[in-house]
View 1 (cartoon, rainbow over the protein chains, first blue to last red):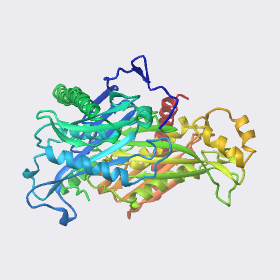
View 2: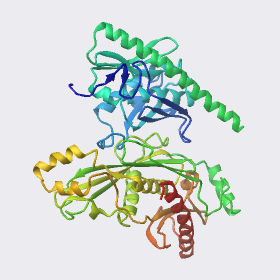
View 3: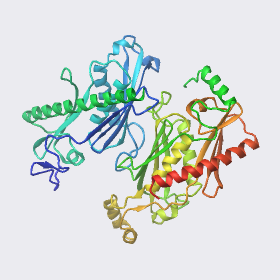
Length: 241
Length: 279
């Protein structure tokens, strides 16, 4: 898309970030009383809340798997989270995102422990500003830990992209709208395995390698923040006692 | 359906006959209320209300729309509530069920019938274009008394909401081709402006079980309640709306008592509401 907005000037981006800099991220674990586990996450202008219920009996019955649990992630945008009000309820976009997030989480949760059960992960986007699926998955991972669901690792997600011909980390809103490519990924930081990968736009092979590297680096930075948020919650519990 | 264990039921009933409640409150006492405004940047106005463990977010979006034929000069207001599965193990995704419809309608009525919003001032071009106000309520954490939390959050969000003239400038400019009279409206309203609001009534909900009536029921109390009564009162202590729910009954004396404590609690909550929106 052609535009007269300059996305990079003097090596700085519109919001004054370096090319390999993340937007500010804040993570808080255990924010809801009713859910088994929950997490509130702010990532730039994104505000996301995730809650986990289960493992509990999967309903309707025909969805049950006698050998393992099913993972139901549900990504949902609030009507007021975007500029023009979004009609409530799932649309094609949110169904697709729910599916890829479910699949990424299923890989990391030890589902064999809970035959016939479902683990429900609800992700609510309260405020949206580019990169909601990464924010959603990252929050969901912390909520799963908070819920005490056995997992092989804490998954984490981040995106890289291309603007003005340069590979950058974590696209902001205008960068997403007017940039040339977006590459959201999710990894398992312990093994480095890739759990989610999507791309749209145009990248050469070199640029792709560069973007993937950058996104993985971003994931490791965020992974530390996730762990810190979880530790902080348990520290707080300790103090109350 | 969450099952309130019979142990919990017996416990609550035993406590109530000693004049106590499970969380140590008096019968006519609210849990702690917290009101935070501007929690969502993309919304025209938003607020998060916490009553005890219950958490509700209400967001306002404002758009340009077509008025109803029977009120061509008035703005339009719609309220919807979503009992999203995030908030409780009992809520399911899908189209709004009867619980969320009742919740949305009670909140909607509280705002519409008490004429808090002066919809006549929300007309852009009579018969053609008006402002449409969408109130969307999201329940985040469900621990009883959604009515009061949802209506308080919606009031706070409305009180800080701004009509987004600047955001919708391109759309309005485009409309000028078809309706040149919009030019005049834009000259009168060059900037974002707050919604025309009047004094809001505050709603307080009580529940009755084992012949005691408690204000602001928690989830456990709600589950064993036989009857429920919501009373909205204004600054003068006048009653502006009432709604009874569930299959139990109230005596006249009980209703009078509920109204009295609704007025007292409503007064305190109104003060807190004004303070949190900076008025």
